[in-house]
Image 1 (cartoon, rainbow, N blue to C red):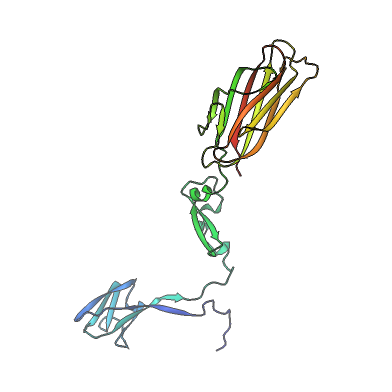
Image 2: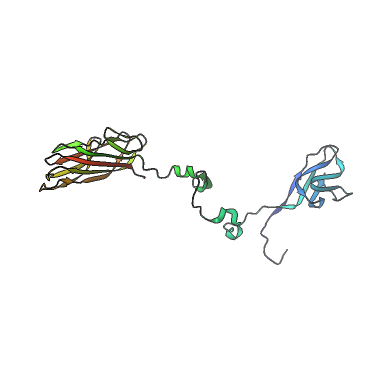
Amino acid sequence: MAYIGNIPAESYASFERQVFTIVNSQTAYTLSHSVVNENDIRLVVNNVVQEPGSGKAYTASGTTLTLTSATVSGDVMYAVYLGRALQTVNPPNASVGNSQTAPTIITGQTAEATIATDDTILIHDTSASALRKMTRANFVSGIGGTNTPIIYVKNNAASLSNNTTQKLTMNNEIIDTASAFASSKFTVPSGQNGKYYINLEVETFETADTINTVKGLIYKNGSVYAQGQQIDAASNHAAMRPSVDCIVSLVATDYIEFYIYVNGTDDLAANTSATIFKLIE
């Protein structure tokens, strides 16, 4: 039949129904939903619609249904809730926007400045094509990493031999987060494979202006990996300060040591420091 106006949004609707378990010789039953009075439901007994009202077939108030005549074994009785229509049509795709949702659907509708460890984050699981939630702690556990271990060691006034490449004794551990530096050697701990930044700073000095060449060397597993040097052909320096740094891939049990070479004459000594830390990949 034709009509004037918009097409109804609901294509199908039904009313909620409650089927009762019959008890012989009983007149009082409990409703699943509270009602104002008997006119809020349609009661059907043995496929016959009952007349509501006082002095009629039944009355109802709240969740109490009272029958005028008691039921008997074998009766079939159900109630239809006339005020509880059930829509069976979903809203069209992409039809729900900000104006259709309450402001409280997302608390404050603003970005959080901080996030607690047990707060949850909504993510899309592509393998399951579904939205899932994850705690902040679990979300960040597999992202990036930490730049540890971190090593910072020094040696002030280390005594040097002339024209000799010798291992530096780093006897002052300022930082060693993994207890991985011992006997002037850094050994990569188990489970800490990755790329590392390494820096060696050297300041050599003597009592006379006779230093010609200074090299700082970084050794990996007993062999030279990187070096930096300063040269003065005139040998008129009493102090030189070369430095060397590098990035190196290391795995567990790889080790790093620091060496120095000085070409001079008198009372050679050096202040040295080294820094090692794992890079975040």
